[in-house]
Image: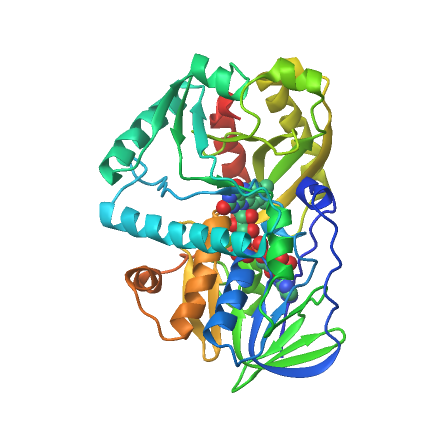
Length: 439
Ligand SMILES: Cc1cc2nc3c(=O)[nH]c(=O)nc-3n(C[C@H](O)[C@H](O)[C@H](O)COP(=O)(O)OP(=O)(O)OC[C@H]3O[C@@H](n4cnc5c(N)ncnc54)[C@H](O)[C@@H]3O)c2cc1C
């Protein structure tokens, strides 16, 4: 039996989780059962894969297994930007090869449309809004990024609006930024509310087991999944558990579990809202990838996201939370001096699966085992799209987006583990430092 050596154990302070509707998790699995399909990981990728498999194979039984509770893991603790546009940080104009960029745009749109369609069809109350996003800069280097990205968007034929700092202040209330690019295609969402809703509206031929961490696997003609209270035997296994797939024996040393951190204020009072001004719902990402993401939420809170750490086992570190809440506070007060007295209600961290070459993994991993893994921090659209398309491909579909995913070389190898721990954390700290005021 292959033993799973690390299990997810996210911190309990995610603001999105606590401020979304309470739901009763589905019971954990007990005993022994069989199914045609088993999927490990009920985040955005697994939820999309399960839904699509059920649509494609209405007579098959699909089992979706989650170690924690749906909405509690990374899919419920992100910043809620469902982004349409490609942003290739390795290219001069952030768009790079135009054919690739067009396909990535199509891929992201598959994810956005599948989410929108499902949320609307089931009336999922998750504040999903096509509100666009600002990408904003304060440093010279950040302004240069925006100028380069603008050239890339022209090349791709995508709409944007350049927003000067003064005008931006009238949109979002802070005079902190010099310039922004507004792109209209991003949707913003309450992520935990969305995944809870997606879980509660799965088709009837999907059985979801929560609080069922898989601790061992026998690979073979059938795949047997072991956990503390029983076994699940499936013809085919889909891994949609991001960097934790390394503990199932796949892509070892190729994915990096990088944590990033969010804080959510309490709701602003009417007086504070008046002092802030601007629109009542917006989202802003930084020009520098290590800068600060901000949102004003549907319930009038401000979200701050920044800071990264490399936690090789995929588990949170209390000391990181303690350190990064201070950075969140500094970033918040720099931008919103008029809200200095507004405290954070919640501060949390969550894992991204990153690869050094920014490639993801899609397709077959072994006989009977498939994966949609490593969405490099863009899981809302990309995770949803790859989960859906994996099911489509297993149902025999081929199209240019599926072919593009299958042609990817996948995540490349990392340097040896010892160097990696020190190297990645030093590199993160240095890059964070170079973000300057953008952070
Ligand atoms: C603070 C923060 C902000 C972010 N902001 C954004 C954003 O604005 N937009 C965006 O697109 N992305 C964002 N991301 C990234 C996004 O959250 C991830 O890319 C996304 O969650 C990936 O989805 P997934 O379903 O592939 O994996 P996950 O959400 O990681 O789901 C995998 C699931 O597998 C389960 N699992 C793992 N091992 C086992 C096991 N042994 N047994 C059973 N279950 C197991 C885990 O519990 C987990 O729930 C952000 C992330 C963080 C942390």
